[in-house]
Image (cartoon, rainbow, N blue to C red; front, side, top):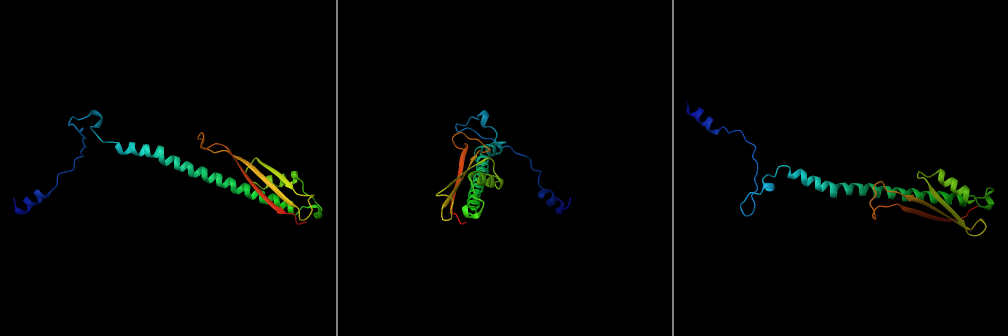
Length: 162
């Protein structure tokens, strides 16, 4: 056998064998439940995902939904008061609460909404109109005491133009 063949034979590495780690108790006696750590990472990930990650994701979703509801309700109140200020007594088609409510409900993506209209005076120019729109927000994920149904409300006031 040549010198080169001997060197190549010595430098070849043996195939790696999968090793298992063993954990021994502090006092030296191997505990039955502490013998192997296989699957430990999966269990830790399952605990973190169940108690940390998933609630955070659902919290973000619910927060986005309630912000969307508030934005839509605020826009609905503004639309209702704009409708009312151009339909005063001098416009020829005076507004009433039912007309404002049907206008707002037709332009709102959420349902059902409660629309209340009030005005100072007799709906003449320079009187003030206030439109209040309310919506009961119900979360998808119900957590008692934390995520329950809440009423989202928006107010808008302007002075009648016509």
